Image (cartoon, rainbow, N blue to C red; front, side, top):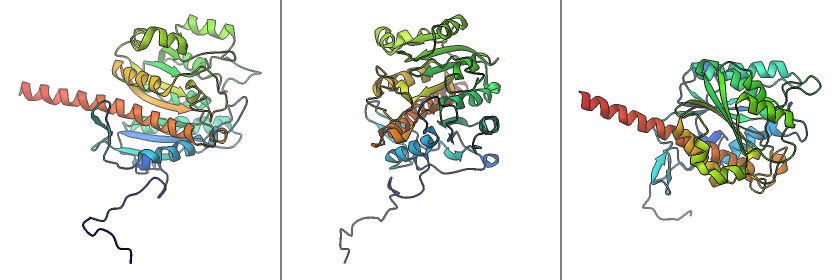
Length: 333
């Protein structure tokens, strides 16, 4: 009974469809006072800022579920294209669960978001935030003031520079303008912006007057990665915020405001690697995954892959920098 090859060592496989669905099956630490990690992943299941289709409150769950595909081993992952290992021990990555959201209470919810990110930063961990609609980026960015001055780099279909609409200043169409008002954010690059419905002409005028670099997918393809980097301050500290609708909806339809003509996965992958090596990314959020509009689950899965890609690029840079320091210390000794 149950006969099979006896020449093997029995293992606990922890396959993607088993166990608790943390991000990438990484360990869980929901008490931020006890946080001890290099990277802290936290969800913000919030969609009170949406102006059309809701559902991003389920974004963190969808991203976590999609991430289990890439959880076959916590010993890191091998990239055959780059012939290198990413996210390998002794790197410590934990899933901190979700920020507590108070239904109908924007102020209290934003306070909870800011407090959680401040705690992660104070513990010396790199915050990776799973949205949630794009308005959550406002309290996330506010919580990064101790890391400034920062350049905000946005990958998005929309400019998100609305000032107020009937008095509402904290919707998902306003995070970049709100960030421009923060003292610790002094430069901005907005990549993938396209199409109608991406703010009024006056909003574009204000963004350009602020000094923001605004590039559409067509413009990015025309000037290439090096051309994009030439417009971003080299060696700076970056807060990277990515709306999943920056990608073309043929790849990621599960979002509230899809816009045709977007970037493709390989383009985003190359952009993230280039940005990671151009300066120091100190925080990252990925927002606007709304899984109810994508029955295939590919939007959440692609979002998870992008997050893992960026984490890999950033930590590989840390690893290389530490190796150079170690070699230098050995030579000096």
